[in-house]
Length: 201
Image (cartoon, rainbow, N blue to C red; front, side):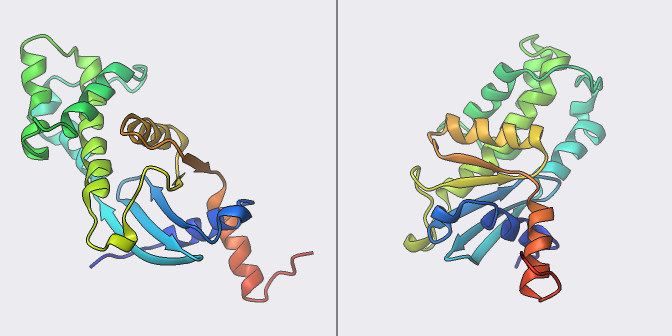
């Protein structure tokens, strides 16, 4: 069982943000955050959605586990794309032993000097986001809901986080990755119009 608390408004806003040519297609929306949401939309209707606690788990691992002993706490450290991609590659490889094993490699690579303190957070982020995206790619309980590389995937949320998801999707072969900006505002506006509270003139 899953629950949405506002993300449906962002999806609605994305659907009515000018992409009228894609409104009738099968579409997938990814809303990264503390509790990331993936929503499958068909003919402007949310058919199913999935939640991942990726953001919350990342924060907990960085602050409240053994990994915090070596991860740099400096928020001003610039993004390390190479470390992030290394994490993605591990998460999505046949050599992965699962997320619980993969996250510990943050510690082991630090101990042997392969990952510097300022690289570890991005490496860990790559592992967690990589596992999330890979799980969505492999999750095909209904062939009619399968995610295919040609299907448009729209990212909705904070820009820097969305860029990480876009990099992950593109690294896994998904070329049609889009960004929806001001989706919440557009969604609330559309709700007002459909409720008769606003006249769209």
